[in-house]
Length: 142
Image (cartoon, rainbow, N blue to C red; front, side, top):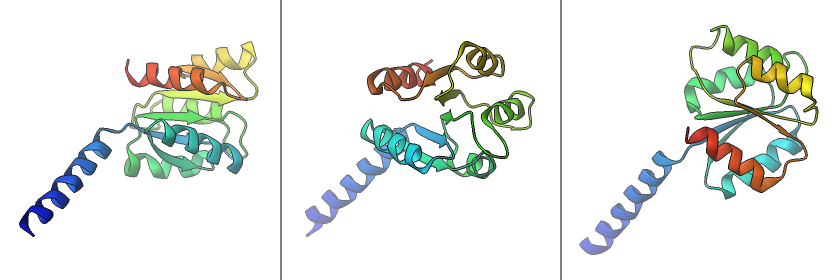
């Protein structure tokens, strides 16, 4: 019985340690379909994932989740991705977290504007999953 309890405790500790070392990614997108898709892809790649359906919701997740990376859609109602980046850039957010913009509108003007506001990269939708994961890994390991 002692051995079984020891094994159980050991497995529980190993599980907790693995989860502590996992990187957390906050996905901000007003499309529930996109949130579900990105969550599935990221969890399959062994990332912890937090979801926000708006920029406002994302602000409340910051302190709780302490994400290592933010994936941000540009076109959202109320506060769009550019406004979100501006607030992060001007210090309205006390946390400095890398941001990758994931958008269907990745024209040169939007890419330049997003990067000018501090985005680490811009990925065009629909995503190419291997390239998507490669870019995320590069930003997280810089």
